[in-house]
Image 1 (cartoon, rainbow, N blue to C red):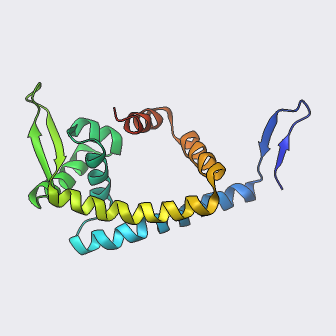
Image 2 (image 1 turned 180 degrees about the horizontal axis):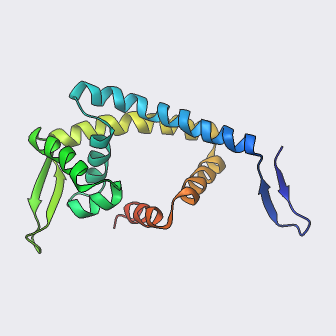
Image 3 (image 1 turned 120 degrees about the vertical axis):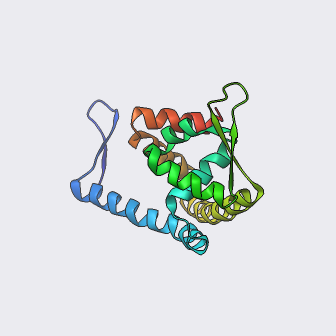
Length: 166
């Protein structure tokens, strides 16, 4: 049972370690479900989750710089370069020289990359849509609040920039 009221009338939330453990386990299993369909699609193409994340964020912000993508993904330059090299060689991503700063590499999905991104995101949107409908609008808002509260300050800033289209 969760106690949500305090003596002064303010709303508090006290969770037992067991309730928190169940929440952690639910996140693990939900993540497995959320990534299962895209994993099957990616496997057919010889790609993994790192490729999916790169494709997702390049699609969200066409012209994204490699530096910004490094920040968003939180991976090493070496790791990202391996992923990008594959996506570029396979014709899914184009790397264009920046117009203002010639040292910048700006990333764009090709039509082939955009097609794969749509297939991947449709699978995840379908699962997310069904879960949101089943849970209802208050749960959707609460879920988003919980996820945002778990982000550290830098992750939250990057997330808000993506959300706002910056």
